[in-house]
Figure 1 (cartoon, helix red, strand yellow):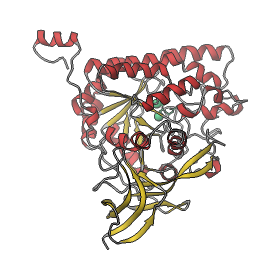
Figure 2 (spheres, helix red, strand yellow):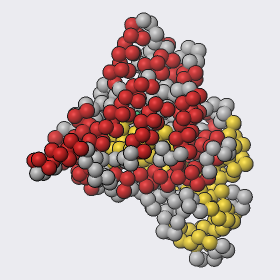
Figure 3 (cartoon, rainbow, N blue to C red):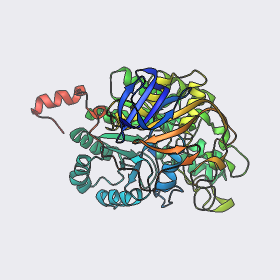
Length: 487
Ligand code: URP
Ligand code: ZN
Ligand code: ZN
């Protein structure tokens, strides 16, 4: 037989083309694209269906301990199964350093967690919370060379946040080594100052989470992070952007030609602060950082997706149960400061954007593919192996029924969270069959992949991390005077 699997007669869509035809798959890779391809061991009829690249979710927290020591609800089995049911075939979760830990040891731990369980392919970003001399001088450069070419830093959370000086150290290292830095940009002191006053006055309900995580805190930190990156001339990705204020900062920097990238997530398109203002502690189910804002912010986020301010749309899946193991560590007495931050989204990320973006004509199918798959692979050094449908690429595909209508219920999802912030939402369009490296992993609502069949993906140094070669005027002058670069 010419092919192991042939997908026939579907509408194949990438960021650059859309055609009705066949995909021939051999040994896990796409071997041919065209019309009436030769015989295959298995034929799959995709007439009337869309054949899209499998999603790449480049921001999700799986089997990760939070800085408060709380373990996520999803391990690498439930997390990857849930992702696969939602049409995602690659995830890039975090190997998270907590202070005092060796990054190399952290990476070993996450491999031990993922290897026996993942059902789809995965890479890792690092979280750097303790940039010691050893970490900056030895561990990070070696890890970057080994395929961990992106890392997240935090400007808030007591046990994660870096000072501006530490951020500069990390950014300068990323520049030297060709890695991409992602930043959680919120002003820590603004949040703490507001939260302290709210709690002192007895306002501990979930809705005050959104009040303390003010938009100005996000805007200020976004501007500061961008300025730090501009000073050392290195690209930077602002993750989980929630509202127009931060978007304008990114748009302005992009307008000046800087490589400042943006990411947003479903919660900023489909939830608002009103969801957090539910009776009792119910609103905790919607608490994440930054928090969902309002209808105007949602509109600004849609606009930024449409006009290219955002390159990537990720889930920021941060799965915590609505009980004492996650959202409610102190039961009914839990305040907004004590509940685990984050919302689930691995499984619904794509169906939500497909239905509300493509279905409502806010986005084209090509934009959908770029925002959910190809741009992620490009951003993190996995392209063209992942994120596209091309001869030689891994056969990672999602076959969508664009007419399929689904009313979301937590009971139909495969994560371990037990609730969904999108309960009752009506969606049109669903990934019916999901293929990872030529293996049919989801078909007819059933999982067909073995535990541990997912593979680790070392990432190349991404093109996106390349500096522009611009020096801010003061440094250019200084360097001329002292006759050498300052860093
Ligand atoms: O609330 C969120 N986003 N929790 C997950 C951790 C993070 O900051 O990404
Ligand atoms: Zn974050
Ligand atoms: Zn996150």
